[in-house]
Picture 1 (spheres, rainbow, N blue to C red):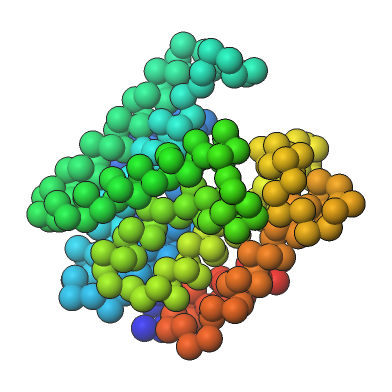
Picture 2 (cartoon, rainbow, N blue to C red; picture 1 turned 30 degrees about the horizontal axis):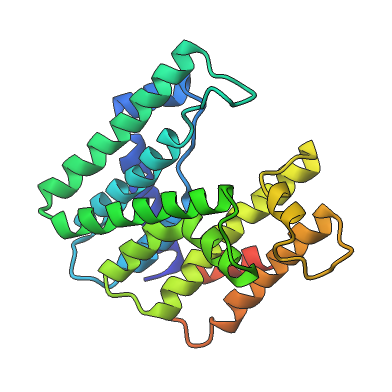
Length: 254
């Protein structure tokens, strides 16, 4: 498939996800997680070449994006100890949004009879939650374990999806780390703008301290460099589309 053809297919998937009255309402009234276009790209890459018709593949990708949106939305329901508390309306909309996304992916995958995929994605959600808890509570044994938990916290659902559709380990390894890399680059940008980061606790604990005298900004940069090195070391012979290759090189160059 040409680069232009791949872009056109991704736009079809995006339009399919966005073409929901409730989604549009939530988009106008709910400041929650938005659709992750890098996740969409790697999900599209994972399902490329299967026996599914394009329309069915788009529906399956859309359903999986709803799984991710549902999880990320429910993850945003605040706790009594949170510094910034949501209003009653914000909290209700958060619950509504998460439940809405959940209902959409259950319905879509049930209609296709993909109960095994539904179960695989639910395992991905469970692994995501477990990784986040371990990261939050610092139940990590060392640098390698820390990075593995970071990858799982952002890409466990994608990894389960890729495995379900028979993608090889190298593809899944690179795709999962590319998804995390997108997140880390965004976190670096936010740190430069706000001076605060969710990663500060890990920095203070000493994980990934490649430079013992590093300040937080240098520490975060070292983490990004380490992740890029892992991606580059596993790209040899990777069969991906021109569109995905272009995006990957763009991320590696940032």
